[in-house]
Length: 304
Image (cartoon, rainbow, N blue to C red; front, top):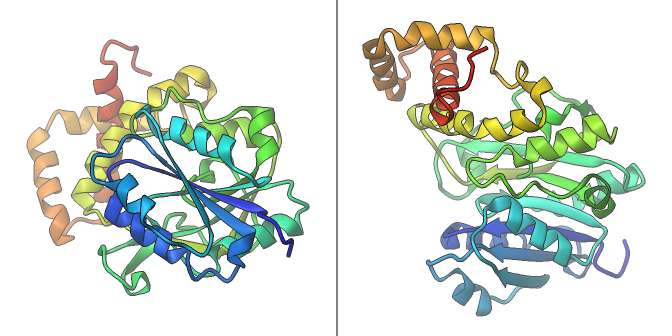
């Protein structure tokens, strides 16, 4: 292991002080020598005392922070990447608690492939926001059965647990700072790097973190609505992604059918907390709200 900083953890945050402090605490006991990694926090103008807490925090690893104007997650991450000291950037969020092997696993996966790939780790969704997080696992973000070292598509380029060589950002471009709502900035970045620039995205189940944000099935439906509202920018840039991104005839038919009976949609939504719906109906609801968000964001756009 080198004696200098070889990997930079970049975290953007906004009004998540208590969760951020838990994330930073999870980085204290990493198996990687704290001299070999740094943490950069970019705060987009939080009003919850985040900077005051960071100023009094003592960590074994190098911790730097920057206070910036709130221009969204993409802008904050780009600032952190540009401020980083290392050649490998490890992206995460202010509500992602790290397993103790997390940083080292990313570094080793990168080193095994000559620091020439993107590496996606394994992130778990939780049933509750409680510690220890290992006791509240619901499911992994990517629910497929993946093998260590398996190559993934750009759809799996999820920036809550992702390491990327700095030069990839310089070659393909940084995050598009026009994404300021729900996001899609990581899928956009993945499409440019993996599909257009032909970089490889490799999976490792050794680099584990936990999304310290539990939401109900009903909340997931409304989250899908926000996703639909935000997908327009991605599709304006890459119209060839309309079908795979769910703006296709199947989702349009689901939306049209359910839109004719809003009482049924409401009834299904009310049943979600009790888990009385079949998996099929849950999926229909999610796709309905996603397409509804897409329609709401630009209702005069031609329907496929």
